[in-house]
Length: 97
Image (cartoon, rainbow, N blue to C red):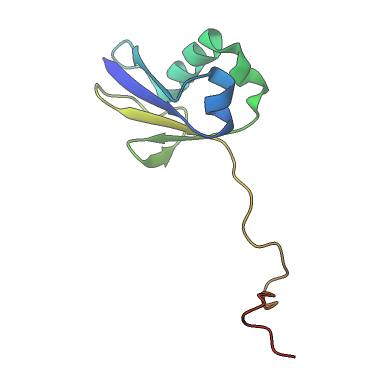
């Protein structure tokens, strides 16, 4: 069976490409695919934790794969608010003095 693997953010930078297609044995799991990818791309070992999504559903390494599945590897993301919750934003056009 063939599966498409998408690498996001820092994982894409580590492996040097946005996606690959791999042929796996029938009955393979997401964990089997990860083991294979770690052999092929040793750079993944230093990547820390990341989420696995199969066909846009977050899952665990035990999930069985099927022909045509799309597997996304997604590192943790950060960002967003840089102020305390409930604190108003300081935008010049909204400030009143």
